[in-house]
Length: 68
Image 1 (cartoon, rainbow, N blue to C red):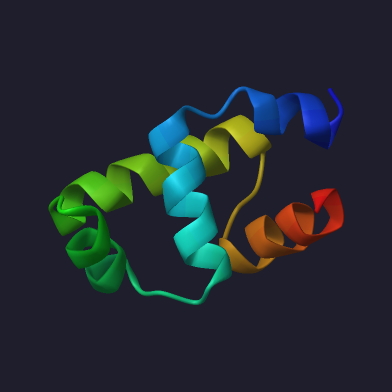
Image 2: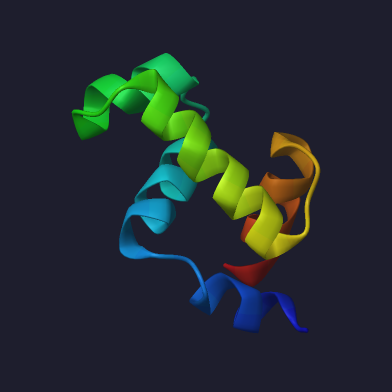
């Protein structure tokens, strides 16, 4: 499946978390910004990694940057 198609599978909240990750925010900073717990951020990150078939933030950022 193409990366663009995979990106469209993300929920709105997962897209918000992804945007924060691209900005270089830590999980705790993302949690504060989105008014959720750090556990919730980790849950969203796990889902994002799974949906986009990546193993870590570096791969995630590379894919997201390529997709624009």
